[in-house]
Length: 633
Image (cartoon, rainbow, N blue to C red; front, side):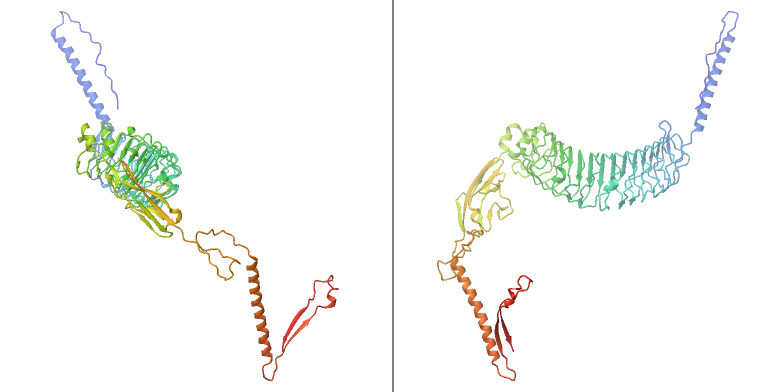
């Protein structure tokens, strides 16, 4: 803009004397007024010239010259406007009907910083469509109809930091599709229909910090495609179409701190090394099909601070399995199927301060699940069928120090306190209302069973208390019995010993326990072994004995050596051999006496050893011996 400088303060000397008339004074005032009007005219002319150098605001657009903003939203535009100010910094083209971006569509907007083309009908982006926008920082192409991004479409965007291509119909990312975006820090490609990502698709994204991908039709995690993005710190996967997260899925992303996997209805398990190589501080696996917390894949994430497993059908949190997550501060498991949280579930978590388990099936939460309740700051227990008894007394006592998120827990399964919230209790009512009754085993008659080996034995145990006691069976070594195996504790509180063996004998204990205490009942089992039997199959008593087939006999026991037994066995064998040979000779004899023209004769001759055989013993290997010869003629 041109600058015109006028000097309004020209020295003017008026000599006022009695000789000058009053008309001279009025003449000086008139000259001054003419100079002021000349100044105003020149300023107006300069503003007009500057306005002529600016491009006029396009039709259907609204321009802000102070902010250098052009807003063409909802302008029914089918193409991008031609007459745009070259000094514009912000261009809004949302909610129009633009279908195509041609070659170097915005080449004159060299000062443009922000371009928004969301909510159009874009289906084609030509090569070098954005060439000339060397100052552009953000580009939004969300909610269009793009199916593919050609290589070179983003050429010239060397300073772009933010790219949003979400909610399109993109099917594939080609090799080097984003290679020109060397300064890009954020990309969102969620809500697309990706079926394939080339191995070099993200090559060139050396500055990328955060990525959102929609992989609903992918059969594998694009591990190799993610390899070039070594500085990535946040990765969001939406709608994965996998049932299992494979091993080493993200092992190249050594700088990744946040991993979000959401809306994966088929994801049931995580392989043991699926998170290998990661040092995450935040992990979210939401809206999946996990039935249990993936303890093994999580155990090496010692820097994890935030864990969210909400909206998975997880039924329990087991005890003493999360202790490796030393720095964990927050656990969210909203909208699951939690039935119970075992004692010691968060043992070892010294910095644990937030637990959100709202919208589950919990009836209680005992203080023993935490390493220390003093570190807990936020507790969300709302929308659970809670039974208000002594197990929740610690929550009431600490309610002034806990943040319930504007949703206080409500008693729903206690008839006396139904629909009461924790804030309804006064200090004097606590001891009388939130009570528990110690367990008592009902049938305390002595149970002593004596059975033979191989039988099945059942022991029964019933107990009462408030809350309902948990029954545990201990073996004679005072170790808890599991629901599986030959000796098992059944879900109805009974003990079953199948195919009882002598080593099963001993005293078993039924232990009924709840938050108020415990009670126990001993039962006795004695298993008799099979009687041993000594069979003597031969009438020669005292000569030899066979070992008994009783199970009580050691299988490695050595058989006794008896000379008499050996002689009898040799005699029986000799008699059998002699009888067989005699029978053959008798048969040949009668055969030789048979009638007919041809007479059969049998001749048996003895051929002695040759006399010269001894003399030739040292000259060769052949040696002739005496033999019988039998001929049948």
